[in-house]
Length: 60
Image (tube, rainbow, N blue to C red; front, side):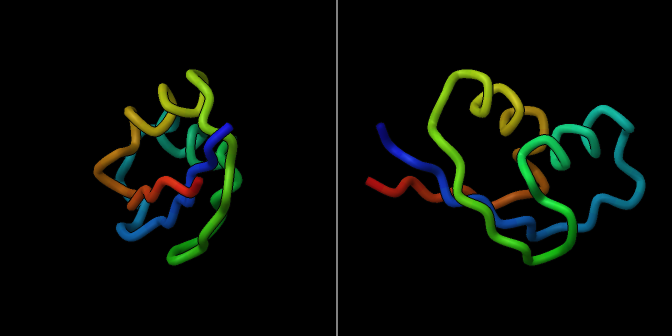
């Protein structure tokens, strides 16, 4: 299965608690941190809610 490389590029200050919780559940704790997660429907849904804060790359 493909993996996603996620990097936070915009600060989470001023965002809703739900969006901050989505970042935490993806494993992102601070700015410019990069994590690699599985490409699942759950992770895609979380990314959809915070797409304005992160940069996503697909890794084969």
